[in-house]
Length: 504
Ligand code: ZN
Image (cartoon, rainbow, N blue to C red; front, side, top):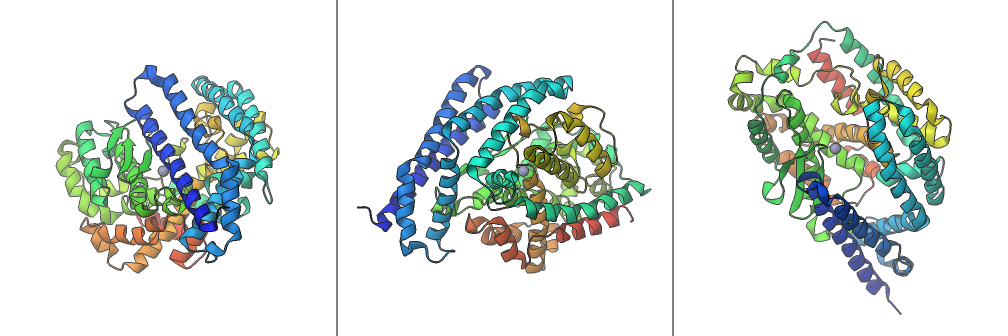
């Protein structure tokens, strides 16, 4: 007979083993994107699916369920904010999600996604949605089946959203986005109508790649990203890999004739990296030591990239350094001209290239279409038309072809339905968290103007990073800011910043 404390110990050991397997997969995944020889692809796929299969089997083993039940019957987790209660809540959440979906269905989705990804690449190249359509139809059918297995309160989309943003509901997100959209559409229009324009050609001059690397690396280090516990490498699709304590790696891609691409990419990924490096090491392998979810993760990358890195205070310190690093490109440029250029607002077709103001409209469009296809309200064949119509309504521009429209993102090809909203939630949370930091740290702007980010990092570490999964996203935002998540802090920030830049 296993006692509750023994069961808790055994669960902790299993949880750590699963995390260890995932961290090994993390190293392999990072290697695949950076230095792996091309011919190693099939072996790497085998290695990685072996590890993820093993981790999944440990989680859904009936033993895991029995141990959970034993601990739950005991009073071990009476205080819901205690470390043990947090671990139990998350183990239960993951176990339930894991066992409810039959292994054959998981395999079928994985298998279908491999073929779907190939067809998506071809469809995008040919800019022909009909090539991708049959695969997308299959994936939607399987995803719906998965949502039914997981269960949901109001809509199948809830079950999908929960996979990326635990505990969040479609209705909540709809409310948040509706408020945001009502303010953003007229703001974008007012900016479009403004006669003031930045000198954007400043950013497309020659920025030697080796110096971009040095400059970006020093900017990440200035934030407090620990390069002795990380690396900065070059990839096609940038990401941050939180392998574990002492090993959090970031990546970027360089463009000789566009300063923003690598630099703000590095700031973004180092924001993810700071969160990972700030997680409590003593709880590694337990939910209490893990990040909350995609929304809060993204709030940290956006906070460092935009709220700090695209601010006038930031460039007051960094612009003279940029001029030293890139004298040919920036000798005749003023700080104000550069600051305006990196904050240009311009409705564009591609999400990943969008500015701070228009970005969220790209997300809302995807959120609406995903809900409609998951619920069956929109036929798969009608996605391009629905996409183009909504795009024109929100951003005021016509989509010339599917490759620059509904085929631009990889997410649907791996059945990542429910992922997109977390990007905009990240922006909303980021604004609310940054506003709270400014209140708590009255000297923050002065610190940033001196290039001293340590007070902000310490505050974020105490309030967010060290908390691990103690709270759900909404709770955490409310605890930090004293208010429920809302569109208002983000709107206030955007209106003030861009109202001044564009003389609105
Ligand atoms: Zn990100």
